[in-house]
Image 1 (cartoon, rainbow, N blue to C red):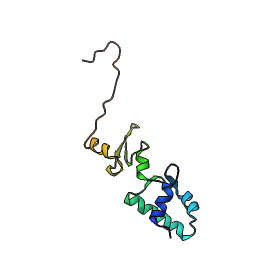
Image 2: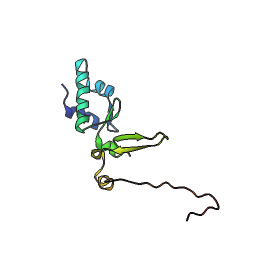
Image 3: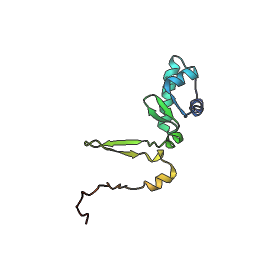
Image 4: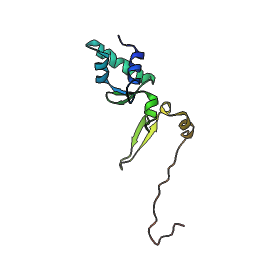
Length: 119
C-alpha cells in the first residue's frame, strides 16, 4: 500500500517536479490492483489541491506549476477563435490574488490609418 506522502515525495524528487502515471507505476513497483489504488490516490490528491493534473496522465506539484507561467482554471472560448482563462484563485500566487480581484480590461492597440485623425 502506497501512502500519499510516498507519492508526493516521488514527484518532488523528479527534475521538473512532475511525473506521469506510468512512470510512477514503474518507479514505485506497483502491480495489479495497486495500480487502481494509485490512480485513486492521485485523483484524491488532485481533489484536495496537493497535486495538479497537468495532462491526462501527468501530475505536478502546485507550486511548480505556478512558477512556470501556468494557471489552472476554466477556459472560455469565443467563436471567433480567441479565449479567456478564468483562473482558480487557489492556483495563484499571493501577489496575484490581490491584483486579480475584480474584472480586468486589456485595451486593444490599433493603428490608425494614414491620414486619419484619432480625435
